[in-house]
Length: 366
Image (tube, rainbow, N blue to C red; front, side, top):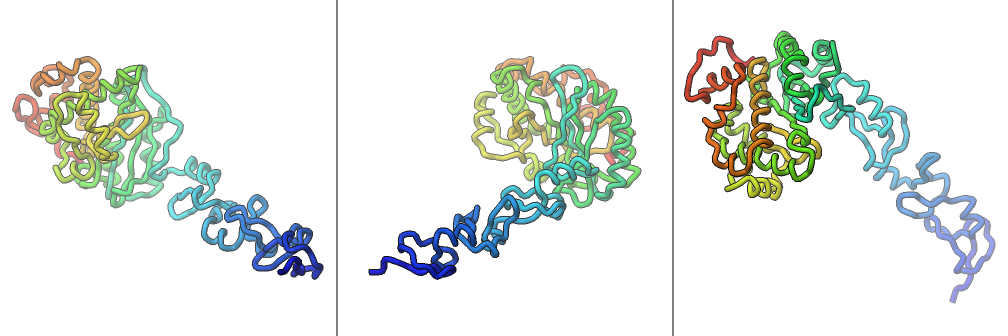
């Protein structure tokens, strides 16, 4: 029975139990400590000349090839699970943070440090998709100059659902700020001047994020208000479908309904248990906001204004009425609450205001 071995490097004889294995060789402890390293990824021992790591990581060639990459900007070694993608680049976190903060058109997952505009807890963040005008920096810079001349109101992102366009995203704003401080008219005019489309493109949505605080200051109040909002959307789905200008196919794909239940409590429980994800008419997957995804994109100011006013009324119903009141409410009861001329005009255009038609003298949406 063998009890000793010869070190493959120094040739000295040592007890077998002291052998250190490295790439198939038996080494003594001194030689192993001087000539080899332990891979940080797999824990195997290898000769120093095959170390593929850097000053912070010791890696065998296999682990380097299969589990690590280098930042395309600074060259630092990154584990594949920590890689940040920006366009076609693979970046470390530091470079990713630098480049996304400096970019004019940000990637889809970008969220800046938010700026909150207006007094009050009921704030809306708008995501307006525009398409067929290019995804170029010069267009984005022009739109940002218009939107942010007086304050930081808007940032711009890419969106994979668009053919060749941009997603315009506002910081959270009160309805009053949207209507009187945010230069929506100039932004929409500028987009049209650069040949963007929104309603006509067929790819574009108008999404409105509502702050959870708009429904109350406690979790219980927020959940109750959101339940009434979801119930309202399901109850008046035909009317809201007409209001939205979406086709049924577009809603099924990007803003599906949950299905009507008997009361708000059952409605919210059903929605949360549906595993429907974010492509729902009322998206509940965000931590701080509820997102209404019903509406088709538009470059018409009155339509955008009316949409925000409608969302404000939906919030008012959700926070000021009881479950029973919302269950008993008719569409005409809801219309009785509306006084804003822009919203009334739009409801008439969509034949939703006591079936009263109106001449659409202002032209189309784009």
